[in-house]
Image 1 (cartoon, rainbow, N blue to C red):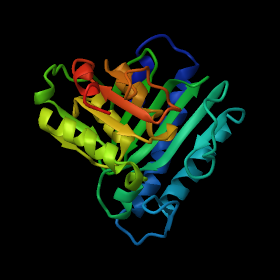
Image 2: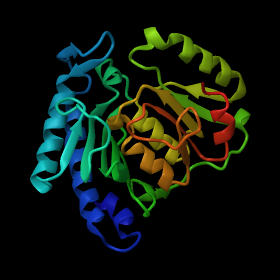
Image 3: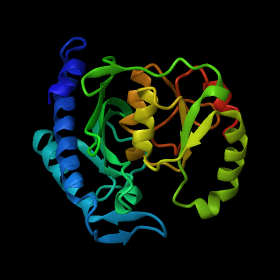
Length: 272
């Protein structure tokens, strides 16, 4: 847990330091399980036509929940595989967990996936971690204490020209019914940026905006567990968030534009 210490030490001690420590331990536990199962035959079931669940999702979530509920038994939990029902933000502290973001990638041995754990209070992100087990990259953040990658503070890029920007996106699981909108936005954006990446794990895409690997990102039809940790990473790294209409981002509203802030208006004008 040495990688968490620079974030924890960056400011006055408070209860969020303990939260981040447990979140980091839980993410590493889940990620270790995922890494051991990577590249092996999988038990796969479908939640939708192209929405998969593997044994790694379930095993990772079980390990994460065991760590969190042991240390914070009174806190609410929203977790993709076992506690996925929500009607907006809960009052008080809530852990929002994606035990394996990028399940389709994992199932196909495409090495872009991770664990995302966000901690929110009254719907507002306060701390979070994103762990990429194959790359051994641990992103972490506490509100007011910056964004960090393996113990080094990270920041968004300073690029202000959209034409020189590398941006990311994702396609929704119901792309069959949203294809026209997805294609329209891609037609708008693709000729006006340096290039677009579609790697298939929103939590990692947001972490990549935070650390400067992407200048911006947009996606529709996301769930709170896709973004709960990543959005705070972006904000604490100096970035900006909104929905497609330019309104403030809300974890429980399924649209996001994230950027370094400098290209935000340009990107926002093209995402419809």
